[in-house]
Length: 436
Image 1: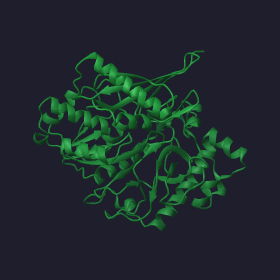
Image 2: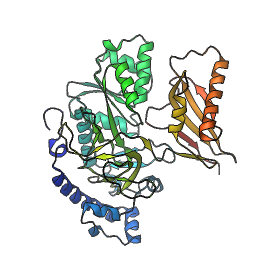
Image 3: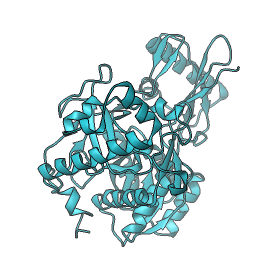
Image 4: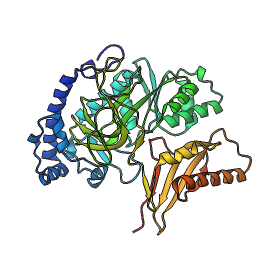
């Protein structure tokens, strides 16, 4: 471990030529492992007449087909594992936005690597062994809670595994336990800030100084709100359950992009429509290949996340590539009666409406011949509608704006603040399966 704000100088500050050689060696080993032990990849290689020894350079990875989320769902639960189940010591699954969850397995070595990556993440944000870390990510099969928990313990910090739920209790713990670091989703952090205000808890009386937030698309305006309301410095973090969980990339003190753990992941950016690889600096879909995973190696996994890469060294001293903040998810899309609908479009409309929050879920019911889509939207915590008529008027106004933007009817239902469970990330879409 390095002193200061870098956990592992050997890899975080590695020379790019040395990194590329390391990546190639690990890529070749991963391709061999996947082709030999994973039926899905063995079939892909056979059908395309591809052989592991064809991978002689990093560019040769483009000869391999992509792995899609549906491939993981079709292999549910253990079809993508490269080791016997007796060697898998942990199971998680993706939270996802739609469809069947994807199962992820870890060997003991996988867990050690994951813990190390999260320790890098925390250290880059300024977390030390002197901190008290409160985690409000879920502690179930979602990777966020356990991932950050073990990383924080590895650097010697005190961990409070509060998990999600009971926002007033979150505030009480922050105050009573003198929490210095909070970790979770950004919009839940704003909910905590609003609850603290309702409880007359002055943020100046708290010990908070740092927040690490992810699992949702958020921008600089949300960061500024969190920092202003909780008096902390907020950092963006990025993880992907399918390739390992949190720790894939993270912001440092410079907050000039998220450093990717390139010794563990080979990352590409592609045009989401053509699949062609794009050069650094161009925006496209992130594609990841795991380089050290034993239980579940993935080759060219399409993340559905839109970003761009920057290969220039960072002022912090790290040489790892940086990715820009995620702007949208390509798989956050519903096709309803032939119309493409993105949650970001709904969020755009809600931002224009006073008295409501930006917390919402789209609920699609395909059980009848005519698909029915509802938007469940939380009323703002500080909103005080004068009557039921005001709520109905607001619902009608949102429906009209959505009709104008989307060209179709979306029923709107206003719900109480805090009633939607968004604690485990971007579960913006709830889709009811058709009856059979």
